[in-house]
Amino acid sequence: MVKLTREVKMKKKKYPKEFKARVALEVVKGEKSIAQISSEFGVHSNMVSKWKEKLKDNIADIFVRKNEQEPDAELFSPFMQKSKIPLRISSLAPIPPLSNLLASLKNIRSAL
Image: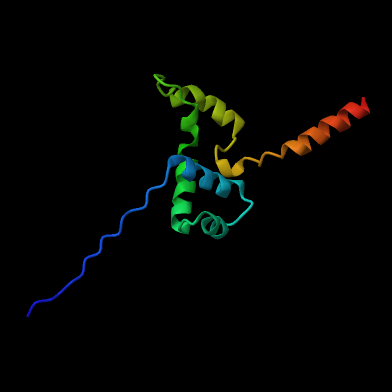
C-alpha cells in the first residue's frame, strides 16, 4: 500500500530591519498592547514579542562606533555601583511630544 503525502513548504516571510525596528519601538512606547500592534502591522504577536526583546537586548549597540572595541566593564563598574541606575529600556520615561515642550517654553518666556 502506498501512502500519498502532500508536502507543502511554507515560505518564511522576511521583514526588513527598518520594519522590525518600527514595530518594536511601538511596543516599547507602551501606548498599545502587543495584540493591537500585531494586528495593526499584520505580524504575529510572538514575532512582535521577539523583536521587542531583541531591541531591549541590543539597544546599547547603537552607540558603538565602527572600529571601536567595547570598553571594559571594569571601567564603568564603580560608576554603576554608585548611581544604582538600572539600565533597562522599560525604566526610561517616554519622550513627551514636541508640542508639549514648545508650550512649556512659551510659558517660561511669558513668565520672564
